Image (cartoon, rainbow over all chains, first blue to last red; front, side):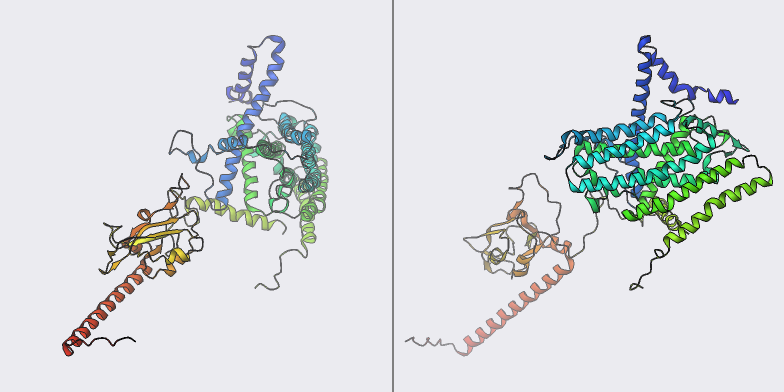
Length: 409
Length: 204
């Protein structure tokens, strides 16, 4: 099969063909509106369902990581004995949260208290607009897509502070301030870890970045950025920062229930509470999608021979892989303290991310090296990041680890 | 090196994940309504009345309506009304029996004090815990028909304790019989030695 037939195969085109078929029923002046509405509905439907099944997958996986069974009871209504491994749990949860009472504190700022969950969901959904889900599937093609993604993603921090402030509760406010400190601290390594990619590809367009990762050496070594000496540390920094940005364990301080009740969500109940969690999962999914796009080759197949599988399937597979990895992390690590959290960001991740930018610059400058010089290029590039990693790690953990027990044997 | 601890931790949880599918030893979950754990022998919950004979539970209650448990019960959840007539008990002796014996399980705190004070080993602790009902008044107040359970059931739930109780009761009965025999023999001997009954001394 030739490359052209692969890029334009029926499966590759099917979602677009379906959309055009529906749009053609509309009168010509309304077609642009239908076009965009269908895109929005598709993203909402796909990622809404994805969110629902992420929650059950997370609960199941966490349970298995801790030698438990996880939810396996909820089946279908009116059919007894058919539990489907508890797969209908998210729908039962949705009905439960919808039927719960919505309590607004008497002293709360009613308007902001209502707006905060709406805004947090809206902004986290907006980030999906620039993710290339497939070869031809991108809701909006922007030249400055990366900039837009981080702008929309950072706006959710505003909503979190809105929630904390409008609740008129000191725990909520303290937690919201902690959340802001955390989110602003980790915004920096997150963006710095992306800068090398912009340097190398010299584009901010997500589709352009994915296209730059196309091609294979010998047909099975993909040219993904994660397999470069500057892309791998960048990916690790991105992962850590993405975990912190989406308030997930081990960085789930803003809603650390043992310390701050439920953080900025203390005064929220019922469906508004669920909306915050929805936004958290949307944010996590969007950041994972961005990670896939930037470092894991986006919708590109890992092996040239597997190109016949449509590109959006590859994207979803990689996305699921990222989410499973995040769940695995959550099932393993303990929560950090707030001082450890900011220390990690400012003293460790930011310097390494800055070095990594220089590393990428070196990689571009030496792009003409070939033959044995290629080995030197790899060695120098690795040294630029590995030596500071080891030295920084040693200095920062000096006196901290391994922990000396004075009384216990 | 920094980060090696995280990798070790990830390996541990990955082993848990894989092991949870093929190694039942790892799984501690008991899926309750379908599977049940074996309760420890000393588990106790709510008292019940012991009957000697399963076929005639009301006729062979060990309880003689002495009302000690009713008076000792800290939350006062026991109600007893004595019978007007007497019935023979297991040893054939005529005894009172409870016309009404009720325990309000919504008040009972399973303290076992009624069991400790009972001189007749008539009330013992049960092992039931699935006692949810739809009516909190009628269904939680247990009358003597619902409280009465045969001695064989007691042997089933607390075998060691029940064997000890049965052995003691048997020994007591034997001792009582022998004492009665000795007394009867002594009486007979006394009757044979002194056929003439001396009149009791006149009281002043």
